[in-house]
Length: 332
Image (cartoon, rainbow, N blue to C red; front, side, top):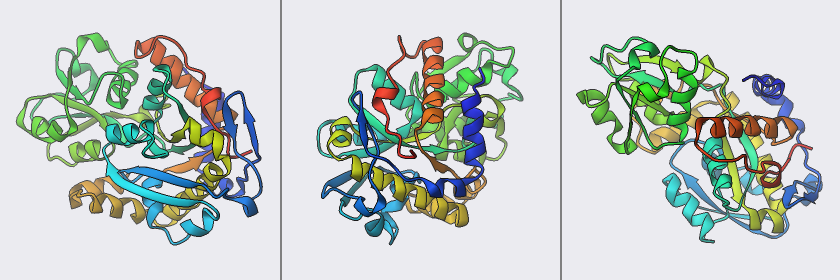
């Protein structure tokens, strides 16, 4: 389905300089915080503990920026990691950290499970860093060839599963006709190159590694369909309620980091190399769209709600979660 708000999102993402005017106004509404006060009141004496991931999202890369202390004036930021996503979420939910990052689909799943999160920034990109790649020697040349074939994803209801559902909507193959295999990403490349699977539906570094494999073929990516799945930055609901100014300050820092990456994309590829990516993988990642930080305003909420409706339609969740009650608009 197509939404006007998503089209506006894509337009904004292609003009990151427009984000530089983002200044947040203080308020708390219906259990969800809205960012507030002027930049001169950036922090409130809080300590924000960030559980960063071993991916080059901006909440990870901003930790090395010399401007962070200035941007977070009044808020002490402490980074721990790198975490794998599961451990990062557990760290926040157990009270050992306050902020981390995830995909919008995972965020929707968390809300559907009743978990206490608040999202404050969308890291938007055009979808080319998530897709389906046919394994070398598989004989798969198109999406229609996936019928009866083994396609690996990380988990049901995750990004890979979402990509598979969305990509196959415009093909002659139903998801139920595909042999979907759940697999740890640590086993992806071996399975992909040894003939254990016929294709991989994934994102980020896993997708780049598959695309960089000789003989592999990209079948579809998020640019080929109406993609709503991007990255999102989240804090515990308790932290958002108690320290909205600190969250606002981090939002501004992420906007500044996205502007820096637009001018110097090696911020992203250097981070992947630091986390162990090969030159072949890093070079493939260099071709992906450079993300932009956007606020979760009316358009942002509409995009999340559109994906939540898809998650209900796909059977990933039972009912729509309350997106408005679990987001902060830091661009007002």
